[in-house]
Structure formats: structure tokens, C-alpha cells
Image (cartoon, rainbow, N blue to C red; front, side, top):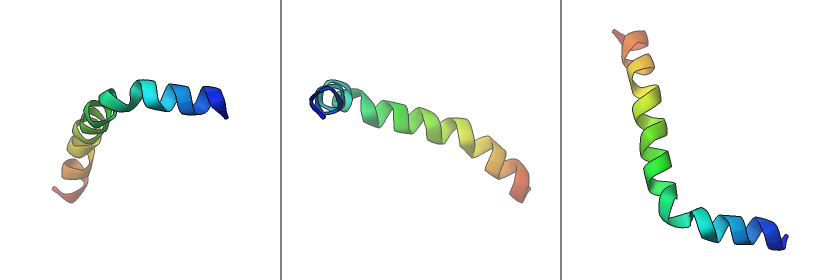
Length: 35
């Protein structure tokens, strides 16, 4: 519990960047499927 909260708080500032990277990584696949 403590480790989980600590890690979550520690990674919080980086979360939007990781989410953006994930979206950019998966977007071309979706475009290829619909294309």
C-alpha cells in the first residue's frame, strides 16, 4: 500500500507524457485499420 502510493506520487508528473506516448504509439495502428 505504502509503496504503491509512493510510486504513484513519484511518477505523477510523468503520467501525462507516458499517456501521450502511448496514444502516439497506438494511433498509427488505428489509422491503418480504418484506412
